[in-house]
Image 1 (cartoon, rainbow, N blue to C red):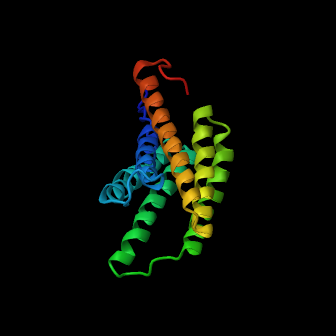
Image 2 (cartoon, rainbow, N blue to C red):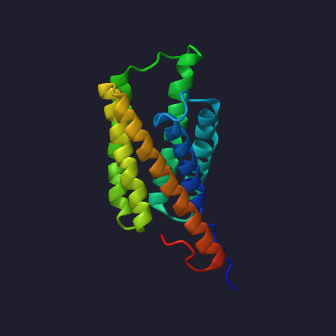
Image 3 (tube, rainbow, N blue to C red):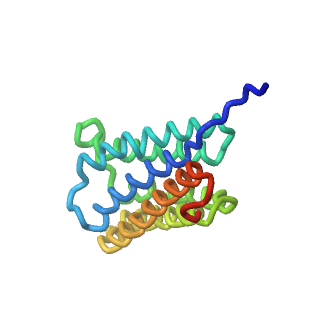
Length: 186
């Protein structure tokens, strides 16, 4: 008798946390909402941050290095981004200037480019998520380096598409696992 237990796929949890949080922030970046609100902060801490870190840890138990690194890293990204916004407001740190913020985002873009190369072994939708995320980080870095509102708005639209693609992949994986067949192609 086998004592091996099947572990759930934590990928959809991480993808949905990333996707929904990315869409909400980029609705702001694209100009639909003038202020970055408590909604984005809360999602960045809880769903984009904590849920992705949990998904990364669960992917570790499944032996999925890519999922572990992706979800844990991007979960920490969201938590660090919220800290960058909140710490100056609490007078615990200075607000970074545009160039330093640009470097922060560019480093995430370089990391994401390497994750995109890793995603080439995955589905086409996963590849699209990482490719669009790489473009998003580069655009956000340029937005900060150049202080260009137009580039920021373009980044917002790219971010909305990126986040929606992650949400789509999350649901495609959940439905595939639940129905034991492909409902949404991925």
